[in-house]
Length: 425
Length: 101
Image (cartoon, rainbow over all chains, first blue to last red; front, side):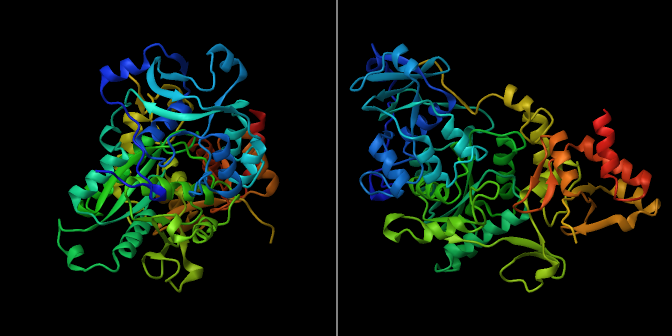
């Protein structure tokens, strides 16, 4: 069955699963090693996470993305997906327009890259249009400035599927597999919670808020009966490039899942998966990109909170909401659910939405950084703000996967195995 | 009042008892559903020195308006100094000690 993705276009699936066929297709191709960044994106393209794009963008698409937040054909697109390369690499690997090369990763075949265009594009233009700043201390801008001087554009075909290591294995689903899971669960309305965090109660309530909003116009009986839910929350964790001080990915995925395992969400309304993507911290533009990815996964709703995908003070708290509101509904096939913060109110004695509670002066706001600070101080947070079962998983993940820390350290960056690998074909 | 850039030291049960017994319970504030925190103030100069001495730390200008992600060992030293001096105004002395090595 043809699946429809972002822009109302068929979901892109450019994967050769038959090994004999793959070997035949790559025979005689020149090879070029792909960095982790480029391999991650090639995998995303081939499985359709970035539908409708079928490969690394060509100049017209990069330009339209930067200038108009669209692809050259007018489809909404907010972040350039580019393959950077140096002149030396072009010469060393004999890259020529009109030819195909075999991208390798871990020394093994990964994907066929049809080189349709070799081009340049001013990096400062990408920085200012996508990130709204030229400052190199913005991590997305730093990544942009670190690009080599040329870009290669053209289609990608995956010839060797990634092996996703434990504990991530069960959580990695392709867009097609996501949709199959939703069908199995009879979910009609599915709301995305984008995360790169271990959940505190503020996050938990954001998800509950979004779920209730998404389900709002459906019969309550379908929510009341265990096992009959027609709406669900998909926690889609972003797994990718990490910075020292971030939570380790293992802790993020496993703690999110623990919320359901410990009954804070019912089994039939909550699910955790992950997507490989290096956060660009592009705030509003990244919010649009997340909408595109989740549309491709088959979701109907997407929750957006305060400072979605932002960093530092580059974006206003609700700038992502305003950008999303400016996009005509027919151009983005997912319904945004805008949520305000939830905070602890000592007067109410509960976690509450700051838009509802009248005890403004007493509110104690959650902050991911503050919670990280509590955990670093080795203090167990109170259960109203951090579920004890989730805390136990944080401690366990630190021991099992984080070399003693639930946060990314130099040790973790040097020693942790990558989330995916490519085996010999 | 001049703006401060505090360091939050979160207090567990054991330390809470010790602080109370030492008559320093009044230095604590309660946050987030009953958690106890020692809020050690820094001025702008002290903040900048701390961020330079401990590059893994960051000043969270967006949400908490505090210096966060200092390693526990560093906060433990600040905590010990607060208890010893019975005051929250210890940052000059702490910075001098770190600079001396």
